[in-house]
Every structure is written in C-alpha cells, then in structure tokens.
Image (cartoon, rainbow, N blue to C red; front, side):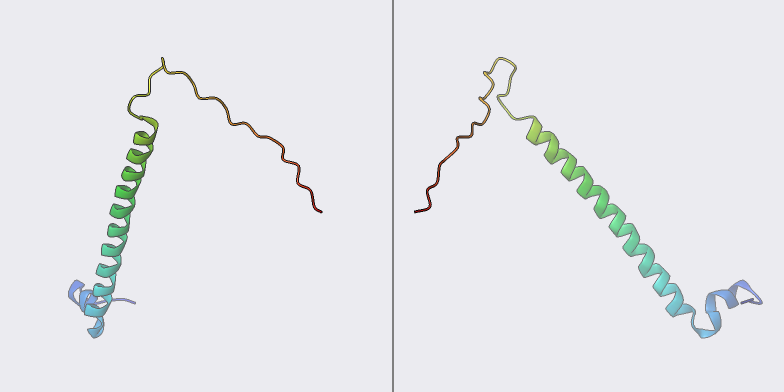
Length: 77
C-alpha cells in the first residue's frame, strides 16, 4: 500500500485512529508485561536468597541427622 504523504500514512484513509490505538495498546501491554516480569524475577531471587541465608546458621552448629525410614509390616487379615 503506497501513500502520497506521511500525513496520508498516519490517516490511513480514515482507519488511522483505530490502527494507531491498537499499536499503542499493544506496546503498553508488552512493556507492562516486561516490567512486571522483571519485578517478579527480582522478588523471586530475593526470596531464594533469604531462604538460604537463615539467621543463626553458622558453621559451628551440629548438622541435622538424615531422615530415617523404618519398614512397617502390614497384615491383611
């Protein structure tokens, strides 16, 4: 589609406001999604760091015993 001038391109034979509004909404939504995603990523990284940096954990503490499993005999009478 060829236009005679830049103003004709912007007007798009009367369809310009609809087309440019759609582009604007698309750009705003994509930018918002990118911003929200970046903030969520930062929050998740901070939560992970906090969970690994528990207060009171030092190298002098005695390590916890590993979990033990005992077999239980179940009778089906």
